[in-house]
Length: 502
Image 1 (cartoon, rainbow, N blue to C red):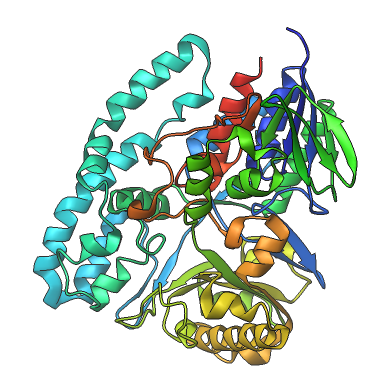
Image 2 (image 1 turned 90 degrees about the vertical axis):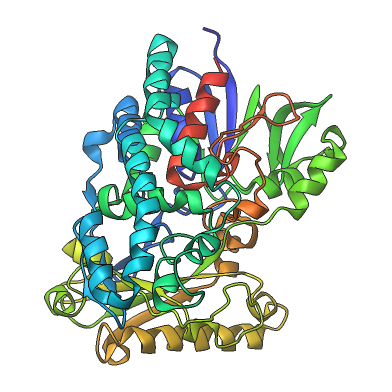
């Protein structure tokens, strides 16, 4: 097999996995990463001895993830661990161990809504069963040759029910689905809209619940350790990882990708894999847009992306044992959304007073992720970049004021879980969607590629993967090659790119 020269733009999960797979096949692979460390959204950092996740707290589709890590040869070097979740609201405070426990919790919390819950779960039970069946096996894309076809047949047999549900609710949002069973804006309506992205497709409900109670994972040593293991293995296989190397152009010749340029230096390649933002790939990085159909460029420009996040990083002057007494589990979802709140209202300055958010302590997962006798905590809420005119980005003073207000608001509200939290803070920082856009180059700081709203989708097939581009030898190797994104999406695109380059 002749050796090919491959350039990968971005060292998120898609770039790192594709890099490992291609280097293992003997190709000459170079990954260019704009940041000082690998990982993208699936990364982390230390500040004053406290470790924090950069953005991604967890992943699902563990059979596929684990198979990929075994294929690469690093599974035993990564400390994967199951996430458990505590759910808190004015109606309940529980840590359901299973979907059935979750259902029981809701029936106790909302006795007057029994009929609505009965009708709701008669539909969701089917979704849950279908998604649970699919999730037990690795995705067929991870196999080659005859094993791929065997896996595909098995997958399609398992997925028939899920595909039926997908067609039934293809264009329905989770809000529209919930409104069939509960009064719009009621507490059960709002609660059941919180398990996923705002206005996500109703057909995703089963997958969200399966993830939360059956397949929710993190890395005991932090997500950055995962990225580090993959990058170290990539280099051992002969790959080159160039950090602090922002790619400014994808170079083409006669409609064929031939390399990239960074810091006024060009690098030639037989193939280029853009393991980064889809929009920026075509609208900013491509040196010659004339080879892309104008209608596609227009579609890319107008397409909406998933929400970003606002994250607060706190180093606390209390031990993990003391923090555990308050949080009980490392991960808490505070379901405190005010009835009637509109997630699409970009001009509501008090938006963060009304929405649900999560609390996560890396040091409760692993004591070594904080200084002795201290603990770490992250508060995280979904947020549009466009909130308050892009967080007042054109006015630095307004940006600081808004960021500070949101930070104080969420810390104060988190005191319902951790009393006197504001007095325990030794270190603090915060990241807005603008921060994430600056570090990851994801449009609007998008946390999971395209919008999850089925009425705003970019790809027609919401369950498909499309790594192809109008430019020969240029592939999309990130989660942006599928509608839902996420770590599983990045994984699938990495395998498909590896199969394309023989």
